[in-house]
Image (cartoon, rainbow over all chains, first blue to last red; front, side, top):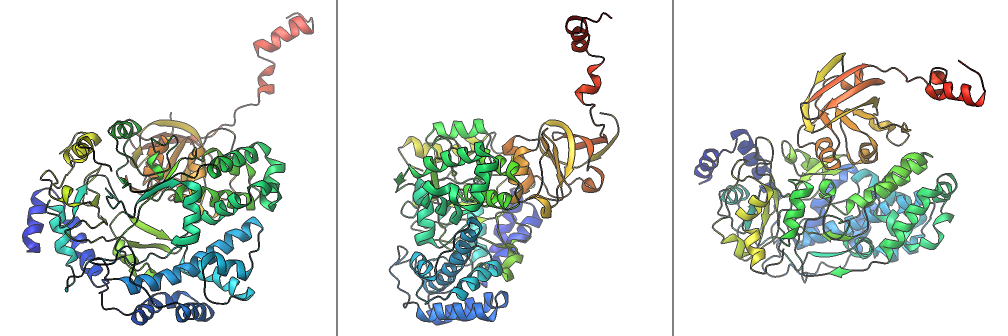
Length: 454
Length: 139
């Protein structure tokens, strides 16, 4: 079955070497699928095996304590029901990620000249372990050794037997997606999972990243702490230096932060369109005129400069990380450049994945030859593989199947309306003349015309 | 621009001429930017290079392709860029560089420091007028 689908894809112009990569990666990814039957204990063991080589014995002791003290995993997430096959590994990863997030927070707080106490960290991150001052140092080391972020395994319907990644992928690319549409331009592609997708302004988004999500991009904590301490910015050591050496930049930064803090918009029940194919400004504006929103941190709530569309608003967080690095070196000129490059505050868009591979270094090879890679401290870790079910699952896969230019780069998943859309077909370069054509061909524009909300 | 040239992969269209600055990853945070827009030359870029790319007038990397970080960021910033230019970091530091991002050509020649304005002052029209009307000194 796979062979005939491969032949069809080749006939449609997909390079054989790319298909070989897809085949290899799909098979490798298959090995890392976790089944519904995995217990919490097994999930902890699997995770410890993967990250164990990266951490120190003291780190491991801390991780073990956190696992031991964790309440038994519950299966009453939003994903409950059909989509519940990876709850235990997800729970285990969340616990580890919480520790990593705390370590990242401590590092950034230290750069800002702040020293959170163990109790503050326990409370802020909901860590059950009773932390000592020495543990705080270990948390920082843990973050440094593993990276800033640990991707949680997502969930996927099991229906008794594992899904065949390779077949699902080929089938999807051929226009018969079990649960998806393909996009010529998206890493995330169309995310139609309104329950999990939402838009909010940067301040509450940042708060949520710290409080709940436990996935902290570099700079998130810096922005969080600056927003918490906005009236005393000048008293923070590095910012005090900025105030003295480059008061104009300090004033611009302060203005940006005040603007961010005053906007607490939160819009739920929206799905977002993320993009890997980066449309030009004109194309983006045309698309937006049809009601399509592009992922990112819009300068006016409309257009998004998409160079930062990959993991925006991590782009904004990244700038705060850069700002502190420059200031630490006394490089106030470049700090000024960073502040100048901050976008006007606007809506931050969030998107979630359903199924993720554990994000560890040993899986790095899975991304060889592919784009849509996820970078961590020690390099590229994993590509996201998405799987869902017929009733409208939500995830994406990231493959680069094109020769050049913007051939098919991403796969988005959507609801049955899109799945059933006969115009959903594999697009290659030349099949559409413009970004808008591509949107039209994929049915997005007609969907919008019918009052749909992307 | 006369001189030597290198070729690479056109990554972001446009044309820019300026002095080349090679900035390895280890020097990102200490890099002191020149006042004039410059050409950023590096092996590859990562998100940490953003501020430098934001400030640079053109970008040249020794590695990467049309979908690399350098290329995508340069396109969105509207800065000319050529990637996969072999030996760029060895040859382009301190040179006057022209980046042809449309055709993937990087031309370079020795950079000649422009003479400070005061050195040209003696030949300038302003000086002649200054002499004539302020110093009351005829030609």
